[in-house]
Length: 478
Image (cartoon, rainbow, N blue to C red; front, side, top):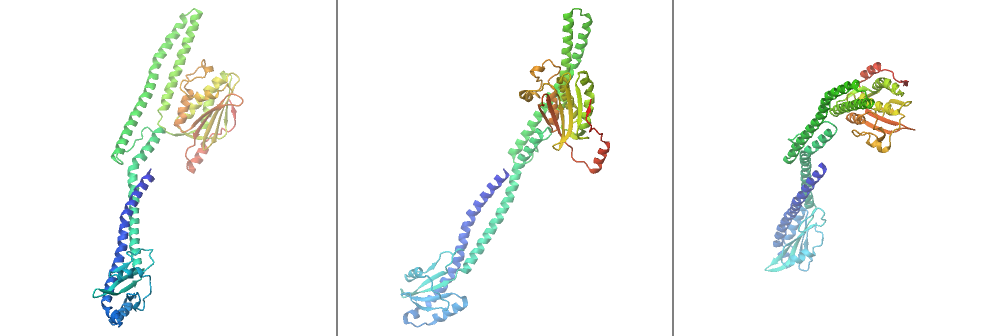
């Protein structure tokens, strides 16, 4: 856009310069030619007044001395020509030239010069002819042939000065155009940058509304107002989810206690079965509320980054989930290729993401299944994988897995709220990471996490980090 504006301004200025300087250049060339022509016509007129005796009686008279002195003083050739176009008297530097056109005009009784203007590319001389009159009769003509080199040099000099002036004007125009284009486009550039910042999660970014033309200032002010409104709506929405989830916990807890108190008074087997199902539904509702609270907190993250040891976090989560895996007869393993493995994430992103993925893997692997958590450096970051030997998902199910409250058709009766993978996706996106899921070989599901590595630390800090690192390289079966 800036280049287009500058080119438009430059093209307009060039057209204006051409329109102004072309007539001026023609005028300067005509002026220089006219100055020489006027001098030569005056000299030729004086010679014509002295050339009468030479043409009437064949006596050179004073004209011969005048032509010789003129030749020596100015270095310009001149000649007296009779009516038959024969040279009667010529100066020493006289050189024959194509003077037929000017002689025709001079012998008809008129003063004439050729060319009208001398151009830089002209090669011929300036020819001036004046008739010699005697009592109204034309006896001949005086012809002066002047080399045009000096006139051409003067014209070229003037034209170069015009070109230089035009170049300076163009340079000034380019600088002014860049400044003007920058003034016009600066709000647009800043608006584009702020839009990207807001899209990346910085909802506090705003555009300066005192830059550029009034129209763009109004646009910036309108954009800031829109951003404020959208941010306020998002805050209200997230606050509502958090508050609603929190406020529902107390009545839900009270409801569960009352349902539990009904248990001892139930003697009918069908009633006891319904009592058990009611307790399970209250537990399921509690899980949904907890998941909503976690999701609301994750979406409120303001992209604060912390450096975490993903290998240590993975070891901690595997240790925490080992009792549940053992109870479900599932083997939970940790495979660490690089330790420590530092990643740059939002707070608790690695822990919460691994909790959700390990929970799903243990839940769906079934008795005798194997769940492996792997950690390694990959693509300038840290990659974590949770592999299980469960039934896995189809391609269409993988595309829907991160949708809120989505459950696979064959998992409707499995405990869960359908928000685990959604929370993982939110945390990974807030950390500028990646979440991938694919079918395992020969079965199962492979959920992959990738987080960017932190910026390089100074050498001293790196040595301290190595001293504090815990060696997790051996593969452990927990």
